[in-house]
Image 1: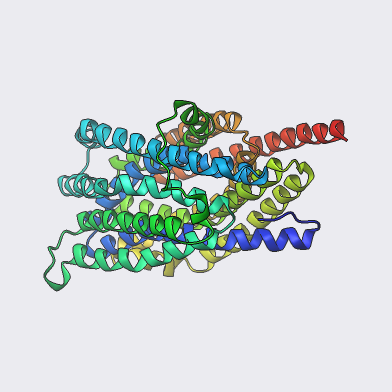
Image 2: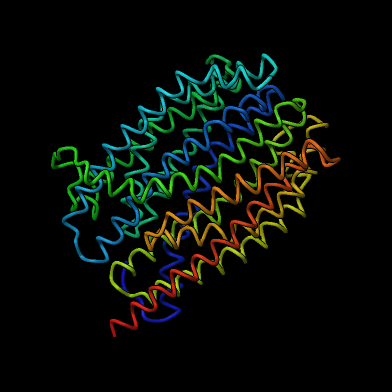
Length: 454
C-alpha cells in the first residue's frame, strides 16, 4: 500500500488489491458451489439436504466471522498511521476471539440443531442429509475462523494476492475430497451430501495451516512476528474489535440470513421447488462475490487513506468502487439472461428442476444492481469505521421490508415461491438507497474536518 496522487495511480492500486480478493472470494464460495453442484448430481434429496444445511450455516458463518473482519480496518489504519508495532498484538487478540466465537457456534449447534430441523417439515431423507452435513462441517469451524483473522491481516497489508494463492491451493483439495466422499470413489464411503461437509472441514484445516505457515515464515508478514510473542488476553482489545466487528457481523448476518429464512419458509414447498430455488440462489450468491470483493478492497484502501488523514483520496476510492460494481453487475446480469439453460444444467440433470431453476434465475438478474451499489458502500463505510448505522439499515431493509413483503407475496398471491424473490429484491433495493445516503453524510462530515484542518 502506498499514497497515490492521481486517478491513474488509484485505479492501478485498487485493481491490484481487488483482483486477488475477487479470485479469493470466488474460490471460497466455490467450495459451497461445489458442495451444492456435486450433491445435486447425485439426487434432488442430496441437493435439497445440502441446500437446507448451507442455508443454516452460511448466515452463521458469514455473520459471526464478519465480526473478525474488524481486523482489516484496524490493521489498515495502524499501517496508514505507521504504527506497525501494534499490529501483532491486534492480530493475536483476534485469534483468541476467533476461538471463543467458534466454541459458541459449536455449543449452540449441539443444543439447537435437532430442534430447528424438526420444525422445518422436511422429508426424512432431506433432514438426515442436512443434519449430518452440518455435523461433519463443524469439525472445521475452529480453523476456518482462525484463517479469517489471518486473512484479514494479510489483506490489510494490501497483499491480497497471497490470500488468492491460499484459496487457489484449497480448491483442488475441496474438489478431490468432495468426489471421494460424495460419490464413494476409490473405496471411500459413499456419503452423498454428507460427504460435502466432510470435504469442507478438511479444506478449512488446509487453508488455516497454509496461511499460518506463510504468516510465520514469509516476508513481509514475518517482520510483524505474529507468533513470536505470547500476549495475555486483553478485554480492552476485544472490546475494540467487537465495537467495530459486531455491527459488521450482524449487518452481514441480517443480509445473508434473510436468504436462509426464505429457504426455510419455502420448506413447505415440494423438494423440486426447494432444489430449484437453491440452485438459482447459489448461482446468484456466486455472482455476489464480485460486489463483495469490491467491498473488501474498499475497506482496505479507504481505511489506509483515513488512517493517513487523506479524506479526499478516501472519497475518490469510494466512487471508483461503486462504479466498478455497477458496471460488473450489468455484465453479470447479461450473462444470466443469455445462459440460463446452461447455468441450470450445472446443478442438475432432473428436467423438472432444470426448468424451474431457469425461471428463478430471471429474478436473480435483479439482485445484481442493488448488490452492486450496497456492498461497495458497506465496504467504504467500514474503512471509515462507520458501522452502526449500516447495521440498522440492514435490519430494516431486509427483515422489516424484504422478508415480510416476500412472505405476503409468496403465500397470499399467485406469485407463489417467486413472491419471496420479489421481496428479497425489494429489501436489497431499499438497503442500497439508504446506504447511499449514509455514505454521502459521512463523506460530507470528513470533508468538513478537512476544511477545518486546512
